[in-house]
Length: 115
Image (cartoon, rainbow, N blue to C red):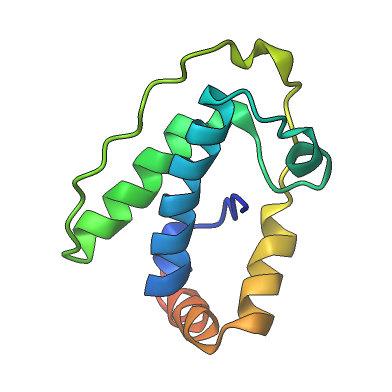
């Protein structure tokens, strides 16, 4: 599980939907009291951006015409047990580009479009 924290528009379908699913898994884990400190220390999760990230992913999913029928459940316990993590989105963007041809193509297209 991980939060990529890159621009969702440069993620392929598999990675976009995968990260969306994993936001739900993170909430489920938190609600079950599962310790996620390892994910935080490894730069894969930041509890403070969980809801915002879910919303960003859903916005991109809807933009692409995908259906979204899974609102993010509320966090049942306190997320105050976790310090804020750090996710290196530049590193993650590079990782996605290296491991996924579709993500790399989307990144290249995005770079060619003037703002």
